[in-house]
Image 1 (tube, rainbow, N blue to C red):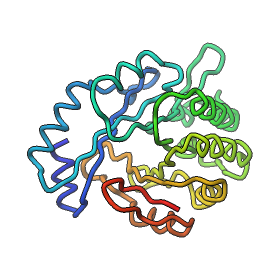
Image 2 (image 1 turned 45 degrees about the vertical axis):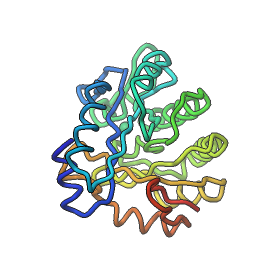
Image 3 (image 1 turned 120 degrees about the vertical axis):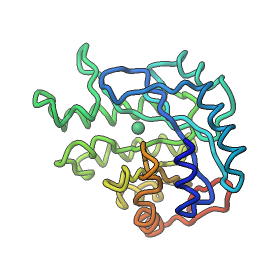
Length: 238
Ligand SMILES: [Zn+2]
């Protein structure tokens, strides 16, 4: 966290948010559940060390609607500025499959996976767990080169409508500068359906990748009709 703060200052960011993973499913080695108490200590340590940087706390809940009690425990540990809800996995029979396994699992049909993923995302939003931001709405696209959002427009629009109803923020995830989730088209649907706010995440996982792809992403978000809101929210609004 300290290295990330140093890097943020180095590249001239006024603020940074750390939204560590709270993944309760364990199907791949990348999944990780934050030690929330230790995390909050690190945030406080960094806030006193880097006084010129605004440091926001947060967490990315994975499948919180499957893990209501675990979610409650994480959120009750202390104040978090940003709580993201995300889906990475779907259930197929008694198997849980993470999107990152798509490329290595020839037995999994990527279109069926994506369909199940969007169904699960809608269930997460309708499940009412207390998160404010919907993370990487079209996550399967990172792992499925054949992904086309037009093929899932109906499901994506249903998700966006549910997110508007809950007044969620839509995260624009730059995947460390590699893939923009979602695209300008989906951001246009978000605006059209009444979506009010957008946030940026680089999913950095590494100090060197902080804010990677933000310049390009902000052009796309602006073209979709959103403008930067005043600090300290760091959101872009319609
Ligand atoms: Zn995620």
